[in-house]
Amino acid sequence: MLRRVSLATLGLVLAVPLGLAAQAPVRVFTGARLLPIAGPAIEDGVLVVQDGKILAVGPRGSVRVPAGAETIDARGKTIMPGLVDSHSHIGDADGADRSSPIQGDVRIMDALDARAATIQRAQAGGITSVNVMPGSGHLMSGQTVYLKLRDVGTIDELLICAAPRTDICGGLKMANGTNPRGAAPFPGTRAKAAALVRDKFVKAVEYRAKLRAAGDDASKRPPRDLELEALVEVLDGKRIVHNHTHRHDDVLTSVRLAQEFGYKLVLQHVSEGYKVAREIAAAGVPASIILIDSPGGKLEAIDGAFENAAELVKAGVLVGFHTDDGITDSRFFLRSAGLAVRAGLSPKVALEALTINNAKMLGLEQRVGTLEVGKDADFILLSGDPLSVYTKVLETWVEGLKVFDRADAKDRALAVGGFGVMKGTLEGHWHDGMEDH
Image (cartoon, rainbow, N blue to C red; front, side):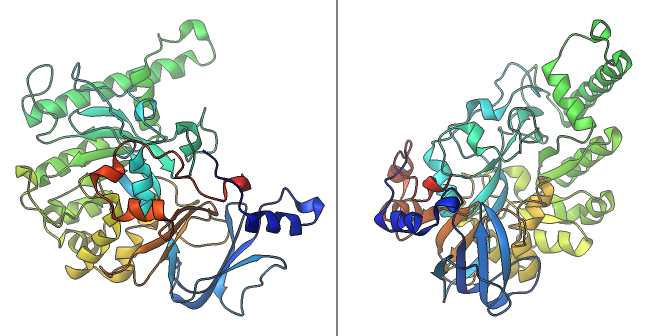
């Protein structure tokens, strides 16, 4: 999986004093137009990274460049934070089966292929952090997983949390509307769907009460229930609910249930959000929306509008974009912002909706979403303005390591190729820089 160390890299290593040989190199990107998202654009900017973190960012002359740093000339390019996708299905994973409409114990990470070509496709689109979900054919289809798109080979190495074996590394996928309806045991009506969800959360509240009453006395604890454990994490605010919903009445039902049980909610898709924008804003619930340039395919999304984002923001809703890959190909994620700007959203908020707003929806805003000192060195180099249809993602960097380079023949194939390129896995795709681990 590891590529051979180049002679240039070898020379760099030999040039480092022996006492610093294990230290990751300092990389300095100079001359680019920087879009930090946390502040105004910086012309002729300097970005300094080391050990996977941002050391400095600012205009030329205001940033001290460490001696011996590797300097990369980025004149004529634009650098912005890596894109954060708040709803995707990359990794070729499946989720819940048809045995029950509620399966909160299912974990998408147990079925995700960390070597799937769809992950490299997302890198080619400039995506560096992603929320991978189970499908929407269930009221609860399972636990999502938050990934950092590193060049690695196992799911554990992709997890974004600090302690993958013990930390919660994802949310809970829920859905309403037409998708989870069906023959028994699935609900046949919207009202029954809400009733089933409510009943399950009531059981989770009771389960949590028993756990609290038992305290440290194992003999008094109820039998372990993996599904209710996940819902207790939701009730305690440790796991965020990502609720697939389209129609305005379904949106309000999602909000109503969240308020009833007090859990954190992110509305996903929200095709008719503009119809109830004031209600969403009053509830303080963020909306992760999708903008499809070829509408159709689902009756309950027929009233979806490009103006959705602008109207939600005008009402005071925190808005982000997502791909729902493969509904929107990850390589075209930037296009979502451009379409929303064309329909009235400000360019500033459109870029926030690709980065920091989505990071907030995943609870990851302290690590990703902006170019700020101390944050993860996740960023992309673009050929021009990110809102232009002519702009290309030239390079994608995750934690200071390059994971996509359009100048590389294999990567260029990922950026422009069709089904044949994406089929299967891509051993040998990983880049120079792995030796920095």
